[in-house]
Amino acid sequence: MTKHDFKFLTLGLGLLALPLHAQEAEDGTQWVSDSLTTYVRSGPTDGYRIVGTLTAGEPVTVLETSGDYSRVQNGDGDTVWVLSNELQQAPSAQVRLPELETRVAQLTDELDGINDEWENRVSSMTEALAAGEERIEELEAHNRELDAEAEQSRGTIRRLQARLDTQEEDLLLRYFMYGGGVAGGGLLVGLIIPHLPRRRKKRDRWF
Image: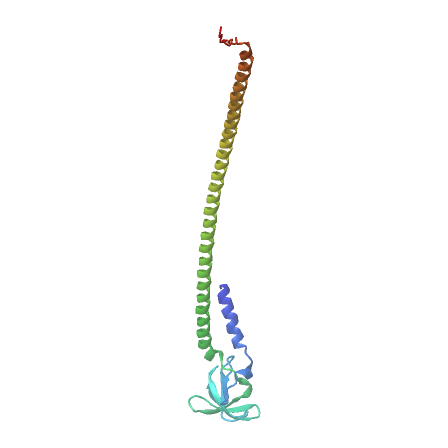
């Protein structure tokens, strides 16, 4: 027996055990007890002869009560006397069983529908989760690519900055060399010029 079958069996037994007053027929109908086949008599005491039986679970209409007996009428219209304690005010299990089976079948269908719905929801959530995880992996891979590109760009910037610093140093050195050459040339010229021979001025003679 599966867990679902046990639940439905429990439900069926629970329905059978409903309070009798809640199931009492308003038209006086009662049912022969399910536990036995009931002998019926022609009068309201044990002294009257047995005239037949009533089938367990058979519905009858109570016409009157006298002592321990009740006069009842069955579905065929026959009137007999039966012990009152062999009647019950709840529908018999035999009568109620088809209804219970129908109800159990309905509940089974509803439960199957609920199970199918939950399985569909779980499947949808699983697919959504898988898609989300795949998207996260894609984003993480793209992020790693961007980090690699950024690191490569930083390396390129560092190399270019180093080259720029070297070029600036070379340029400053050239300026320094050019300036030193110019200053040295000027100093040299300043040292040579005083030692150059001067040309004498020619005097004009009038006599």
